[in-house]
Length: 448
Length: 106
Image (cartoon, rainbow over all chains, first blue to last red; front, side):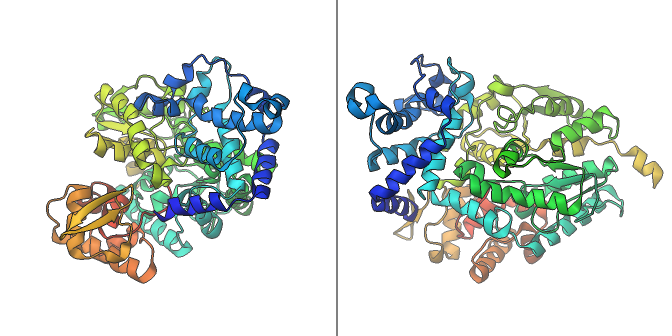
């Protein structure tokens, strides 16, 4: 395969100077606390069963601290006295091509950065941060799997991760506007672009525009029902994704994030609303200010919080009997475990569907769908991803639900694949799609 | 890497079932992919309208079309595209049209 050969070629072409500068970069990514965590594991083994890779395939290479072990070994060999003097004694291993291959296999090939190991770690080792430092190091050495990097490159070149041209975006928005107007029988139902001074700047995943625009229509229907003053950017700044979170190249991540920040400045909106997306929320809400080293003068919220507020303030009304099937909820790791948005989606769903059931476990302890951390973009690891996703598939099957709601398009895609692979016979929907279906529109009809 | 048999020859698919070499695509191969990847025994006129549009778009522009363009160009309504291809426009229709896997959250 060209992909494998190319990465392998790059590894073989590494010079001593490349390896040294990679190591220096790695050291620069570790602050004191992180460096000390590299020597803190007490070998309790709890992380093994916390990891969906290990649960699906209980082999040593899938134990989180084993994956971390290659990074620890490198750190010891390069940056500790004992590791330099007596490497065998402390299991220190120099940063050779062989170890670099192990790094790539562990941090890109066997980890979705879901963070479940970290919250179950006896010591509280921040494994995702350490894995991110390793990915960042590999990125600095130009050793990111090519298809993951291609997605980042699209964002850098086109302002969105699917290389959608501006006219294609506009045409799709106009089309969905027509569809929405037909659906709600109101010519005033709009998907406003570039409306200066709107309260909300709404952002979406390019996947919606390119292939699955019904979720955009559903979100727009909710805004319309709430009579909201909202807009989306006509030019770059409409895409909420940031695969810089996954290749861990902070410079590229910052450059990508600037698109939304610039759109906010240009359109002078009050609040940046991140559509239903796990990593997009994590990037914008928590990482964005760090990447740009800037304080944002505006709130960054999830669309789930917006819908939650609409229901709380009676700005929209829903009839849960319109969603009669059993619905369960998949928690995207970046939105829930990393992002802290846990209850809004639950409050919204309990009001919008008749039978809501939780998976076990759920919330902060929920398992990754298997598609996180950029896994969906890295074809090489497909078999592992589908296998690790088996944990999620069993969780879903146990609920007996017919619909899985999930506020993340990346998770939607992985769940669609799991649905096929594990014959789950479920439908997968965003939260907005269920809310839109349950909307009670009497007040609007009275008005018109 | 997976392979499928096609008229006695071996065709290479990537780990996600997309053709390794998009240039070897033809309509007979699409039928084999339909069976192998989407579980479709038969491709109807509607399937072909979508597949042929996507293929000609790809041959001209070397990229996958927006689903808007697919609906407009093939005359198939959006919901019907999803009904025709269970894995959706990207992993269903584009795959059967022999395109490489699109980048992004797919």
